[in-house]
Image 1 (tube, rainbow, N blue to C red):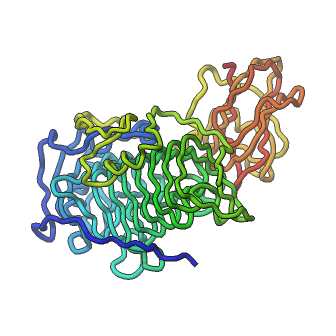
Image 2: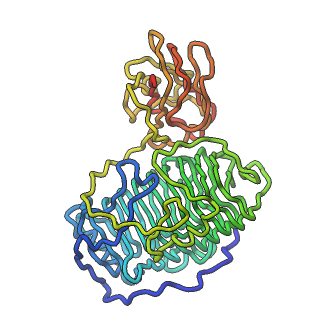
Length: 519
């Protein structure tokens, strides 16, 4: 039985009086937008995350006014910046209809839309017992707001109990300087603070506080729901959380410079083939802060520069694989974006000064001294790409893909798949082995020099591939080995056949493209 969170919120933020049931929507000069800084982490990839930059700025003091602002745009993709002040609750959040929106009462609904920024201004924005739901949407920024006490049971309920929840083909979301709070665990009616599922990718959570909850958040709703990933968590405070800080099922996540205090049962729970890069974090007064827990579906981690201060570790078992007491890496993760690390020793101080709403939007530049960023310039929003499932390791080799026009064979193939599908340049076709392991090869009529390959998983299967070997198909020699799909390098070798052998996987591995490069 999971125990309830021990600590409770002691006080609520002071809020602004609401002018009326429908709130206020005031058009503001574009230069008045309060958003500062630019997206970081994985939210900078896949075309970037700019939210409503370049669009009209409006002010809203109720949930209904937020919905009205969305619904009065020219289209569902017209950029807009919504500045929010006051308390947003069930009483002032009604459904609004329009051709540019799809809203619902009792929840802030960002559904089937794009190019939106919601930012707290003035005396602050508090979403009280009311969650923010992002669904089938892209290019969203949420900044400087508090979301508290959202329930999935009891009264009132909102957003399935998640403070911020994303699901169903969500792309490019930056959540920054927010405070996400509950007042207990599942037995008290609360669920996750920051959840992602059903094909959600390219998300960054930065400079935020998550506290007093049984569940910090998850990536993937089940051991077979592995379509999510490319998530960055940095400079966040996780305080008094029972578990899921976060829970990862498949995909790739990068955690750096976070401060974890009182993780009561478990912390970063990497499962079902997930790969976590864990850099320069500070863990304090906590238990089982990293590993694979409550399942036998293994996950992986790469660790560097972390501090473990009064951390305890449980014994290993069939469904319990803590990384400690002396955490070491069991995978490698390539990060495609630039980032600067603060030393772990100063993380408690830096995060204490920067994380959460109402902290002046201060950030760190790696010097262990918080800085105030410049306002984001108002620029046109670039075209947001349609949702696609990208390469799990976004590091792309350069040069000509030698697989195009080559031959292919393998050890086995599942019904509906073909060896040739891995060298046709089409991500919608794929090869799967008949079981959880197997091999596929690219071959040429004459010896060809190869030093890099790129394994691209099919849509919905990102993170399925576990361990692998790359073989010289002419001699059987192992060129390299590792885990997880993506770009793979090895010593340049002249051969007629190169083989990618999957030796472990979660779910059904699907290789959409097996690209080969000379170097």
